[in-house]
Amino acid sequence: MTEPDANRKYWDELAPGYQEQTSISTDDFHFGPLLPGNADLRLLPAPLAGLECLEIGCGAAQNSIYLAGCGAACMAIDVSPVQLGHAAGLARDAGVAVALQALAMEDLDQLQPRTFDFVHSTFALPFATDPQTVIAAAANLLKPGGHLLLTTAHPAFAGEWLELGDEGCGLFLSSYFDPPEDVRFTEDGTTFVRSCARPIGEMLDWLLAAGLVLDRLVEPQPLPVPTMSPAEISARVPYYSDAWRHCFDQVAHIPVVVIFAAHRSR
Ligand SMILES: C[S@@+](CC[C@H](N)C(=O)[O-])C[C@H]1O[C@@H](n2cnc3c(N)ncnc32)[C@H](O)[C@@H]1O
Image (cartoon, rainbow, N blue to C red):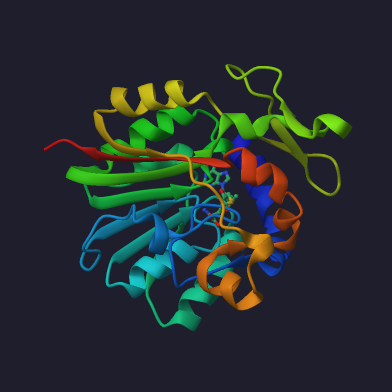
């Protein structure tokens, strides 16, 4: 089985529980668990209305649905038809159109080059067979001057969070330059998928080699979720689950994601 096929099998199986247990807003653009959304971070290009957008590894496409609600024309791809089924239902509920397509990010070259004003992806790149090739293909889909917003796994978060008794808590990371993979199995144990963080400098080199210009590099801190009321969480934390809340100590000290905001020169 190829890696994209294994990812499809794994995510098809996981999707129903994942979408039920994770609260992902369509009223803001999210970057990751317990983190502020774009209403706070302000990383999206402006104005959004009329932009031709592509989301890579969209899951249930909450970010594309948010952008479509702001007047953007959105396409969203994912390897998992079950995730895309959730996306179709959410888009219908929100009353917006998002063009959904089952496509592996390894096959981005099937799309028309220089078509999009804005390409975005949130936590899908760690599942890529060859992330550098995905970045080059994504850059190739941008019109000159178009923007890429890439949110991916922070290499430091691949470490193990240890309770050290009197010493407090801390991170054990065997190698920053070759962070440990996260290996996950399907329920029948026959198929596994790997997700992998890469060093920030290496990923930045991939963006520059793809002809992109870096505008911002952000390592966002979480909102103070333990002190927030349910109403505040629902208003300001666009990606929330109790499972992540239990990791708040680690999330508050180590960035979960790194965000690259870049554009293609004219
Ligand atoms: C952690 S989820 C993130 C989903 C969405 N971006 C979000 O923020 O909610 C990772 C997504 O990547 C998709 N994915 C994994 N491997 C992929 C591949 N090779 N090509 C396209 N999508 C893939 C999965 O199906 C899943 O929906």
